[in-house]
Length: 169
Image 1 (cartoon, rainbow, N blue to C red):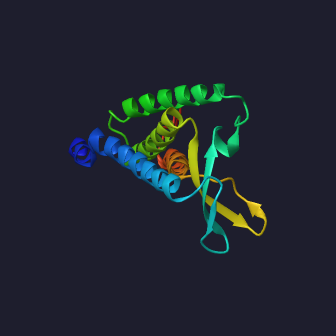
Image 2: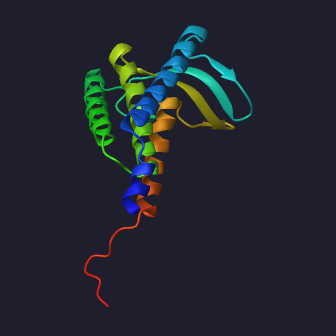
Image 3: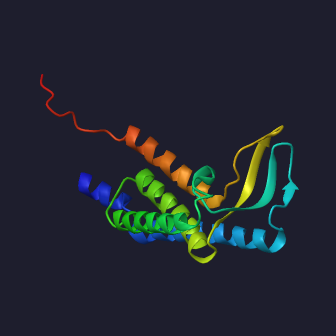
């Protein structure tokens, strides 16, 4: 009976791959609009803590290595490509739903930023949160997907029961 329950809960890898492609596609759509509607460096205040902006990031998170001279682009492309291939392959196997969702969100975000680095040479960021004069570094939907996927994976790892090795009575 247990085997039938597990089989009924199995979702085909195509669903998770499709979710990753949807995340990357939506992210690229927003980036396309930002580049068409906003000049580089412009800001559109939305409320007292959030702006839409048009920023470029040649580095990684928090502009890490942004001023490194250009070689970092290829490093980040290689890392994103390796991670994307690894995650796509991992999603071929049956996994708990929260784990598979986490992997697919990270995959979608990695693909979204990989497309930017490969074709633009930089990542387009457009979300700017702030408090008074303090601004969180600008980011995008791909970054949200990556962070959200990692949080989901961490939560999933804590909720999964692991066998107690060597436990005696």
